[in-house]
Amino acid sequence: MKLMEVKDYKEMSEKAAKIIIEQIKKKPNSVLGLATGETVLGTYAALADDHRRNGTSYERVHTFNLDEYLGLGPDHPNSYHYYMNRHLFSHIDIPVSQTYIPNGLADDAEAECKRYENLIDEVGGIDLQLLGIGRNGHIGFNEPGTPFSTVTHVVELAPSTRQANARFFPTLEDVPSKAITMGIATIMKSGHIILLASGKTKAPIMAQLFEKDVTPLIPASVLKTHPNVTIIADQEALSLVRDEQRKVYAI
Ligand SMILES: O=P(O)(O)OC[C@H]1O[C@](O)(CO)[C@@H](O)[C@@H]1O
Image (tube, rainbow, N blue to C red; front, side):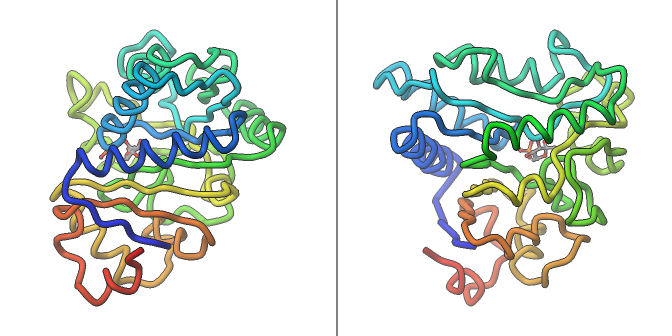
């Protein structure tokens, strides 16, 4: 795990976008793993801007999103399908047929999980996976306690996650209670993982991530066992991490 400490959200977003763009230049048919939430919005805006200005092409890229709420279809404004179209896919030249997100309306959610996991394997696995981190340490929707061996599966969302994500919905009751998410083992199969963290709300969990040993109680801690992880975090997110810890992981 390597740590890139940046000043603020803007710098974090620019650095993440730069790594993604370099990946696509190096391998035009890259497979990207994508996240949703607030943290990655700046990265997507930077990618859209780069596509507009410099014409970086996504024609041969495939993308796999981490998760989707169960019960929400692509036209629902709170679905992750909708989010991805709005914030990234409609701004770049990626063919829609090469963008994959779990189907939140699948009749058989378990079968959908298997299909999704197989699709990732069929394209040869994810080259570069982008992650945010939940305030409780979740990655994707893998909540604390999830075994590290899990592949794509249906999850019951933690009350704290529903609460944290309620800001995107009209009321807390509107936040779905279940989702489909890539599992921790799915995420760990990726060649390179970038985890982004910004702002004071992430400071307590970032401190835990650096201080504590690897444990399923902090799902993101599994990243310490992956050979190629880059954390890009801003000063506020790192404000509770001790200097000694920062030095151990600093690039
Ligand atoms: O970026 P945010 O909105 O803080 O969310 C952090 C993580 O939590 C999720 O929104 C899921 O709750 C992920 O999609 C995201 O990576």
